[in-house]
Image (tube, rainbow, N blue to C red; front, side):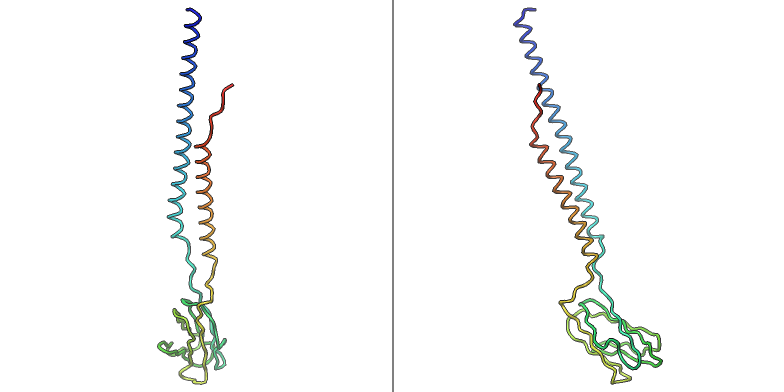
Length: 182
């Protein structure tokens, strides 16, 4: 075979090899991109399932003791949605009676719980012993327990960071230049 023809065949072979290598790089980049996008999709699905299952900040319950013909503490401050439980620790029957709500008779050792959903000051008394009074302050500035909220925020932060990492990897892979052959 003459030298120019051999040289021409060699160049064609070299071009074919470069074309195959470019095609292979595109395929492997495409596979990497597919893997990254699948990972991102899994993260999004997990987040959409996990976030609604997180424990919500639940309403708190405060306690008031009925003893020695007095409510202790006589004044209590709670957040809207919280409850107060009164426990009769006296040797006699008492009631917890507010405007529109009442415990009925509470024997020694009995309890009564009432949930307060609106803000305001709620006076109450023992309807049997009128000198026994108390007040529940329901304030909008009081904060409910925050631990479940922080747990949810931690999960959301992890998911957001994961998505940012995945997007960064996609950008890096898409901008990656093929290595030069020597």
